Amino acid sequence: MTRKILSQIDADGNATVMLNRPEAHNAFDPEMVDALTATFTKLEADARVRAVVITSTSPNFCAGADIEHMKRSAKFSRAQNLESARATATMLNTLYTLEKPTIACVRGAVRGGGVGLVSACDIAIAARTATFRFSEVKLGIIPAMISPYVIAAMGVRHARRFMISGEEFDSAEAFRTGLVHDICEEDELNAKVGRMLGHLYSSGPGAIVAIKKLITEVAGAPINEPLVEKTAQRIAQARTTTEAQEGLSAFLEKRKAAWSTPAPEAKSGKKK
Image 1 (cartoon, one colour):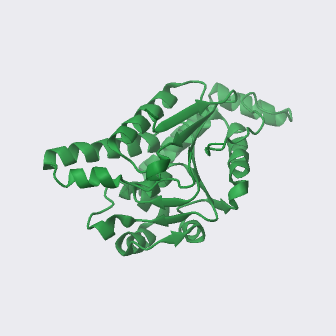
Image 2 (cartoon, one colour):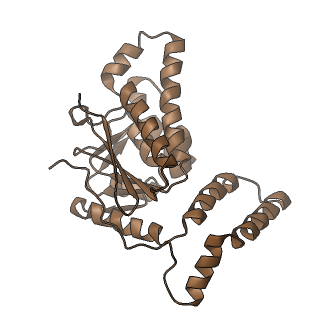
């Protein structure tokens, strides 16, 4: 049986996770959701991994929920539907809370849950020809599980429009609304992701972990005395780490820090 999720780790520590259901435009079914959760969990625990790139083996990134599974779920009990929904919610949160930096490498159609997958990544880079849509409303359902990540990426105003209209929008609009960080021609996509990996690999690995946690804690918090104190405590703690000492020494000595590696080649998810 064909594996629905493929993954590989390069010698430079770049992990590539590939959605591999081309016959269904990489739509999520329960088996694929579980495989994604297991893959993210495994990569989190692997000390070799410095970054995770999510892409697809086919022209389309992800069509969202699998239609056949949705047909079956219409006959599920509430408990069965809740169990299925929790599995997808867990998968998205596992991705969102990964300590390793994550990049969505997006091409083709991105629908529903696929937009959630993009939103849950730290960085999203899309081909100019990519298209996006929250298709749930057209089916009389709601984008509940992806909503925290989408709203964090796009903001309330943009999410409100596109979630209730269900209209398709292009990569330029996805860039304008903050859903993706950069767009480029499709044949430049892998090189663009590779350059971003180069930026990440010249950054302190421990600092990246700390920054991801810091953003989660600070986002939306009132700027008050406790928050000011918390941020002061965090930088004081960071400055005493071995990584910070190495970074400062490298800067003063005009050399690359010990963790820096050459920009890796981004791997294409497309099958030859």
